[in-house]
Amino acid sequence: MEKKIVIIGAGGHAGVVKDVIESDGRYAIAGVIDARFAKGSLWKDGIYSLGGDEELEHVFEAGVGNVAIGIGQNAQLRFKIYSKLKKIGFKFPTLVHASAIISDSATIDEGTIIMPVAVINCYAKIGKFGIINTAAIVEHDCRIGENVHVAPGACVLGGVSIGNNSHVGAKAVIIQSRTVGENVIIGAGAVVTKDVSKESIIVGVPARSI
Ligand code: JB2
Image (cartoon, rainbow, N blue to C red):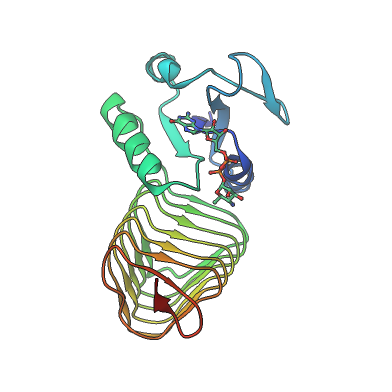
């Protein structure tokens, strides 16, 4: 019997997460949790809303033991939701789209979602509940912390370290062996050539702090 999973959030990112779950093939989607959609209303493609966050404990007690965080845009919110769901007892499977290429020697922690045609090369390590988004590349030996979002088309070259809660913008490039601190935002298209200290926002080519 397929195991059941619930998606938290029902916006744009959740739609891609739905596709990943279906492509991954190990879980049946029980519904979405989002106060924006009334309980019992159709979300999309035969998937219904189970109500808002106040329904989470009932959903868990009803036998839906797995969860996917379907909110992409806000790292703080993702962390808050992760902590709440963890307390209830949900499991956070790693979900991988069938088109992604992942080295056998790479490790990916719980709740991280690997989107279509992403590549994760050898000995890379990726922390909890992150997003490796569409067509992103995480090269060999990278160390990616928890709750990191590598946005579509970004390229993280070999041996890079990225701290918790950081965001690598779409099509950004981080040159090999650089270290990026926690809570950093790297703008879309930036080329990071130097180490980046925590809490910074950096943009441009070559990337500079703003
Ligand atoms: O606390 C919450 C909560 N806060 C917002 N609990 C639950 N269960 N749901 C919450 N939401 C819901 O997340 C909102 O009601 C909304 O439906 C959804 C966020 O949808 P939105 O489309 O605004 O953002 P997103 O995170 O799905 O997608 C953004 O980030 C992605 C990475 C967009 O910028 C996408 O284009 C981008 N690819």
